[in-house]
Length: 201
Image 1 (cartoon, one colour):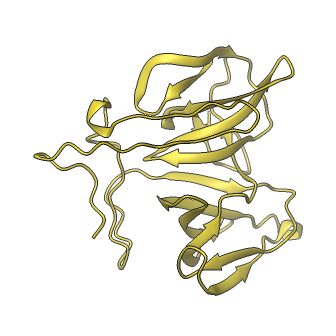
Image 2 (tube, rainbow, N blue to C red; image 1 turned 180 degrees about the horizontal axis):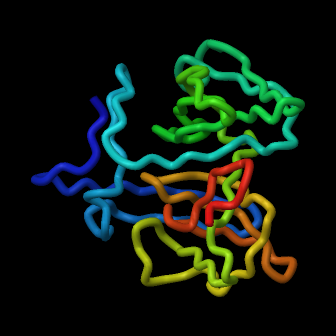
């Protein structure tokens, strides 16, 4: 069993997300976060009994190559999967666990919700998320579950997907560009739209 928050033990989790372009690191302690009790996802690896909210993203709609799914980080290939762009049946991923270079996911069909496979995929696949904030007031934050410091605010709406770099609970670390400057920020769940067919208004 992988557990989330423990009442009597303060666990300091350091998440370091290093960007070659920015040279920035994101480090935070779980016991210092706010709003984590209801939002941090807990699950059983064997049964995948999802307890709380999870982040759901999609594979870049124009990505035509296969995605290799492993039994464990850098382990054996369980299966290779590919989205059916011709029939608009795209690959969706529930993000369940993270390691240094890989995500543990549940892959399923965007068209009918059919489960495809559970396993590990490389972080470098082009995963995406849309913004559900259509009034040009999107805010992205420096840390997940901490709304005190923003990386950028009043971000104009874009119909293009944000590239997902990492996740913590149901917050997503995304890559974006403002005034030709590449930046990284944490997107809260209420600002995410994973509908590949229409807006989330």
